[in-house]
Length: 59
Image (tube, rainbow, N blue to C red; front, side, top):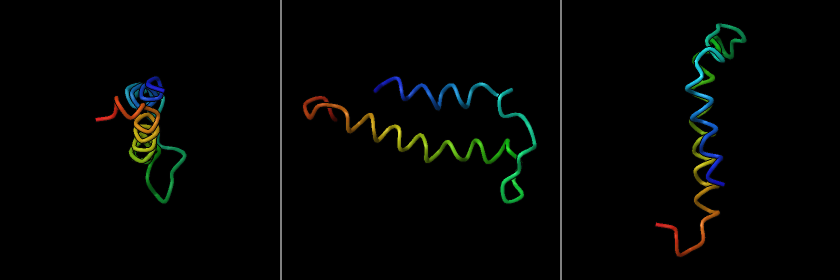
């Protein structure tokens, strides 16, 4: 489950993947809305990893 936390790391640090204008969403270029989309995705991934921990390891 800890490997799920690598997804946002890789998805946001590989800038040539999302360094483009199209497709636009509600007038926002892909460059911006792609980064903003990772905020809730990362929150869900962190929640999933946290819930997968046994009760004695959770903070």
